[in-house]
Image 1 (cartoon, rainbow, N blue to C red):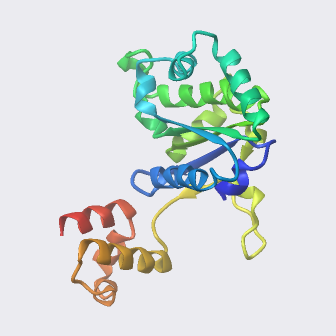
Image 2: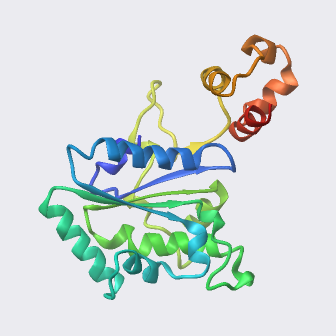
Length: 231
């Protein structure tokens, strides 16, 4: 999904939604890793941010600072876009854990609005800028994204965003956005096999399935990881 989304010039942003521990950060890491594997085919720059950073500094200040530039952000983005075009490359900004932006300018009273405001800044400053070579991937909770889409005066430019509406599933039906959740039974079997090998787990998959309560609990990716590490 992210390969297609990042490759569509008209849709510069890919979003990974879901609750805590379902794999949003892992998906963003896979985005970066995939781009690294493609480095031999296309020049790239991957710029990762942990969004807690933006509790104390504005996005428009931090990005130029990352590149050691004193110019305003629009000038920096224009230069990045032009430089990427010269070598047929792209620039990918990764914003992980939008919900960890717990304040604006260190003001704790903005804890509930700061993540939504950060999405609005990303949307306004990076997504709707018209630079085809600049791509963005972010992760956040479902409810934060929904609020960002509906907040008056800060609604995102949804027509610019890649979603699974662009990918029909096997049944021909489309879904609304990319949202991570608990494992399906097939996914759990595959994941447990990998965790069992990595952490030397003694319990057979069939024994877990035979305990319905424990089985349901372990369909949560975060719980499975914690149990495997502490076993």
